[in-house]
Image (cartoon, rainbow, N blue to C red; front, side, top):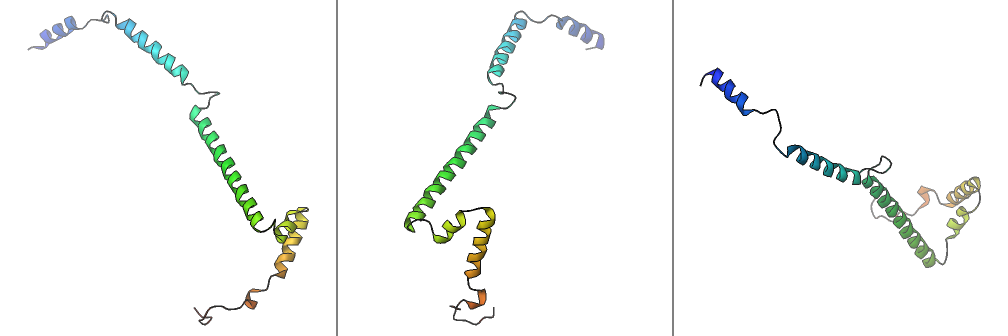
Length: 124
């Protein structure tokens, strides 16, 4: 086929006007897509999944604190209330708490005064 015949057949086959009904179909699909995207639009510029993760994080922290509180109260009951050291440290200002901790640490024997319960020598 020569080039002139190909060009003429292509000119006759191509129509600058869209097929009948194409404009309406495209507009209908665009309207449906915009309606869907409006329903999934972020709230205040933040996607909804971020709110879900934040809520989940808060729930995990609250559950962890609740479980820790329950464990601490069970331990306190087993020890007939709070221990003397814990009760003494928990009261007062930060400076008083620090002094009390230092006092309690001073009562502990130095490392070399502990009994050696191992059967071997001191060398590694």
